[in-house]
Image 1 (cartoon, rainbow, N blue to C red):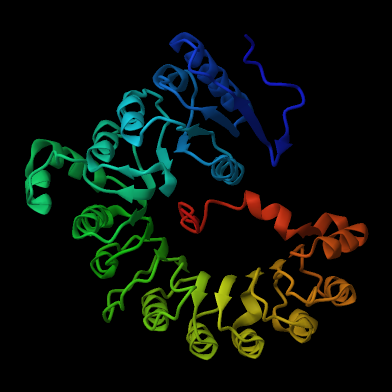
Image 2 (cartoon, one colour):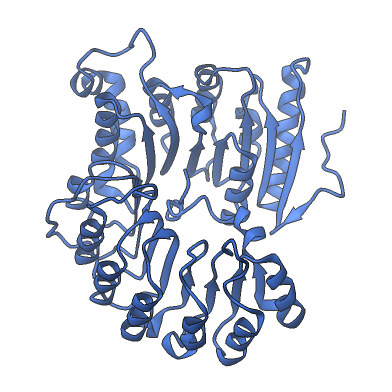
Length: 444
C-alpha cells in the first residue's frame, strides 16, 4: 500500500490537498504510516491539508516527526483547506463517521497533549455543530496537557456529560479542584482566543465567561460571543477583536485600547434588527484610537448612524461590509469624501446596494484603494456593467485587484486585465477561517 501523493494531486495557492481513505480494517500501524506520510508532506510543502476518514489513529508519532508550528483539527474539508491556504500552515481534517465526539476526545486530545514538537505554538479546533456536544473535561485535557498552547478556537456545542464529573457549583467546585487550577493556569497563558459556545444554558455561559476573563490579561486576539465588558477593561494589549452574535448592549467604556487595530461584528442580527449594534460599534470605536480595520458581516444596521460613527473616527485602511442589510450608497459616498483618503481595501460582497454612480467616483473618493470586492448580482442580472468596471481600472492607477461576483463579467475583464481581476465566487472558498482569524475568523 502506497501513501505517496499522486503527481496529479491538485495544487491551489501552494496547498497540496491529500486525501487518505481509511477503512476500519486498517491496522494501527497502517494508520500511523498514513499520518506520518501526511506529516512528511506537510514538512516538505509547508502548507498541506490532509483529509482523513477518522478511526482510532495515534497522532503523536506522526506529529513528533514533523516540525510543525500549527495544527488544526476539524471536520470540514473546505474549512481545513481554507485554513491551510490562508495561513500557509499544516492542517488535518478528521471525519468522525460513526465515532462519538467523546471517543475522539479520549483518543485524540490526549495525543495532542503528548506531542513533543518544539515549535508547536498553535492548536485550532474547528468542530462543526453537527458533530454533537463536547464536554468540558475534553477541553480541560487540551488546556492542561499542552503547555505551548497559545491559540484556541472552538465552534460547536458545549455541555456536561451525564453524570457530571464536577460538582454542582460549576463556577466554584471545578475551578477550585487541582484539575481546575491546572486548566486555569493554562488558559491564563493564552494570547489568542477564539471561542464560540452554542447553547444558552447558564452553565455554558459561565464556562465561556470564565475562560475569557481568565485569559484577558495577555490576550492579543479575541473572538467571542458573550459578556465582553469586563474583558475590554483588562485586555490592554488587545490587537484584534471579533464580536460574534447578538450581544447585549455594552456599558459605557472608558479604558482605551491603544493597541487595537482590527474590530469586527459577525452575525449580529442578520435575520432581525439588533437595537444594540450601533451603540456597541460606537463603544468600540471610542476606545480604539488606532483602529485601522473594521468589518461587519451578517448584520442589520441603519446606514446613517454607522457611517456617521465611522466618519468621526480616524481614517481606516480596511473596510468590509459583507452580507450587511440596511446600508446606502449615498452614506458610503459621504463617508469616503470625509475619510476615504487612506482606504486601501473596500469589500462589499453580497451587499446589493452599491451602484455604478459610486464606482465612477471611486478614483477621486479613495485614491489609495488597492483592493476592491464587489457584490453579487440581483435577480435581474449584474448591477454593474463591463464598461464601468473597465473604466474604473483605467482611471484608478493604485487599484491592483478587483473581485467580482459575476462569473461572466470576471471572464470578460480577465481577457483584458488578467493579472488583477478575479472571480469572487471562486476565490471565496479559500478565504481565511475568518475574521476571528485568529485575528481573522468570520465563520467558526
